[in-house]
Every structure is written in C-alpha cells, then in structure tokens.
Length: 159
Image (cartoon, rainbow, N blue to C red; front, top):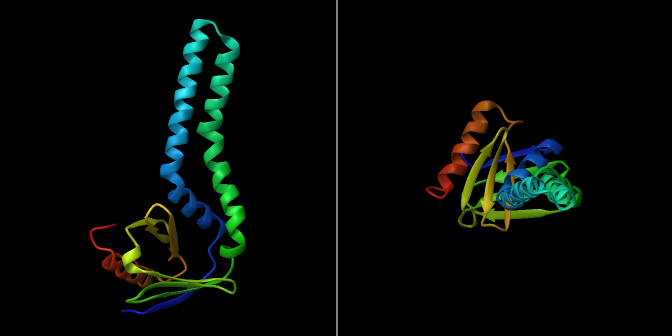
C-alpha cells in the first residue's frame, strides 16, 4: 500500500556494498586484464625472463586484488559527503524520492531498467550511468517485503 515514507541512515557498509555491486561489471574487465597479466607473467617465468615476468605478475595482482576495492573506496570517499547522512525515502506511484539536508532526487519508474537485491537493500539501476539504493533492513520485515514487492511491480520484466 503506497506511499511508503521512512527515514534511514545508510551505513558505510551498505554504501560500499551498493557501489561495489554497481561497479562490478566494470571491475570484471580489470580482473580479466589482471588474470591475463598473471598468466603472461607465469609464461614469461617459464621462458626465463624473470624481470618482465615479475612485473607482469605484480601488475596482474594489482588489477585483480587492489584496483576494485581501492576504486570503490575512493568513489565512496568522494560521494559520502552527500550520502552518508540521515535520508528520507518516499516510494509511490511516481517513483522513488530520496532526500536529505543537502540533496533531493526523484527517480521515476521508467528510468529504472533493472532491480537487484542485496541483503537489507534494493538496488535500482538507471542504465549504465547510475543507481540508487533503498535500504530496507531498518524496516519491519513485513514492511520491507511490501516495499520490495511494490518496487518490483513497478519495474516488471526489466529487473
């Protein structure tokens, strides 16, 4: 039963999880490049070129293990000024309104092309350029299920 209106303060862990989830497809390319560099490095070790092999393996390890979490944390540092604060949510027939003392946004349903669920939140993707997260872990379980169901009904066959 809409509208749903509630307040939440997204945790740092939720912000990190939602960013990592959204950036995951981009990170897949970095991880593939890292794996290719490690394989190339191992091949070069077998051929006896220790210097270049070491460089390739180390660079590959950086792309595999360091770049994704470091990028996620850097992005969070840049946007936490706007997001890491008590936030109001209004979910109704028009879309999802999210606002705090610094910013307000209304995301219409037709802008959402995919929905994903993470523990305690629903992630709505806005193409490849953006997303928003609706935290549901602070809501009573029945209300969280209603909110999630309402959002899912508004984005049929696209999420």
